[in-house]
Image (cartoon, rainbow, N blue to C red; front, side, top):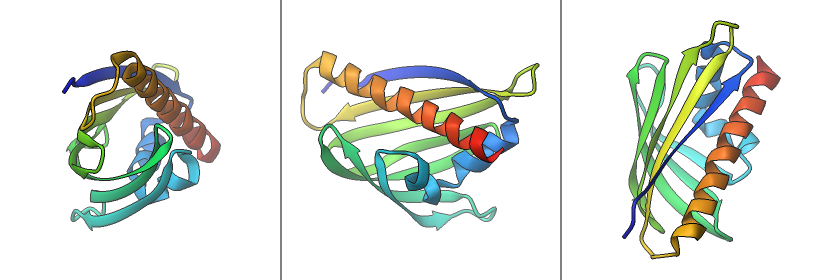
Length: 148
């Protein structure tokens, strides 16, 4: 199987704390992330942040289910996840990182590594991956700017 890795960047017109608040409110992702149909928090850490979440999402014309484990390795700057289990993927690992900009906004980096269980042509995977990443960042930026 081929593992695909991609990085996208965006700048949001809101402070890192506002980005962090939206990105860590994982149970509300279905309200603003169009491909996420359900996000059920299974476990939380002592700070109340989700550490294990079951998702149901639209993917390549079908519905997929998967569970992610979340960590927060750099206080309010990084949200990282790894795949615990999934029905169409062997790996779905990534992270958001948030850094303040001189203008008072936030630079967001989004990294994602995906490995599917079923082989599909590389160009199809890259197109789907690009759509996922660009859409995720656009929707996150829109949500943050609409509530900030």
